Length: 387
Image (cartoon, rainbow, N blue to C red; front, side, top):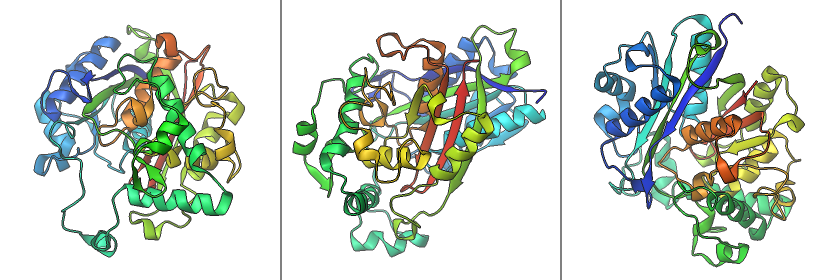
């Protein structure tokens, strides 16, 4: 490829108790993150000619035309634009689309943004909304959304493979241990497996501490060509491989409750990057619920189907373990502003640059990032490298 795509700037917005520290609308959130990421790269807003974003929770009307609204707000008239929204996996898909656009010369500087004020506006709920399209076949009958669908997948995994609540809890405990090393994380107090199991049951078998946080938040990623990056401030991170797919929206239509499309997107991303599982130094895996991590590890091939419970046992995912994931605390302990996928990319880049202080993974050279969206509906996987 004559124009190889690289990441040259990342930023996220500071939170205080899960709420935006500096307040503001979803446009202000994205504007602050965009400027911070561009400043880190040594680029200006005027140089951005590719704009990618997705709609946010609780923003009707203009929120469904986010790139248009955001472009107006930032004064950007893009040559390339993408408002793909496949839930939490959207931003890994955006990264792939921006990489392709840069490589083909559709744009030179791509800005990927996201912002949400769901916590401060108490807008994170699907309850009370009129069921439309295929949702009419589930929500009127009492399905809690989205946790109910994930609980069904967890129960099926338990039935098929003997997975236990203790094994699910290991994921939450590891996430909190990483968060304790991250001053920006929303929840940093230690928890144990017993604490997870003692927390209120929300949708059997998932407890409160099996579920992601509900916070505000936002961030930005800036990309350009490797050639352009040579004259910039920051160390470039290379986009080596990617894949994306989806299968369903309503959980009743999921082909297999214990297998996500990460089995396809991960294989394609790793094949494109020319790496094996042993080459991955750090993974950022979407953690909407603890079961999401188990299913994703299996689908990606880090362990056999049904083997994730054993794979995550004994602190393997936690600091000091041999498979570090979600090193900022992830969606379970750091933040979860409706759609978390952009945070996965930000943390992966910071790990590859060696900027993470006490939570830094030693000599991290290759990161795998996997986003999950909807009700285990979509996945997008990226492989990033510092070399």
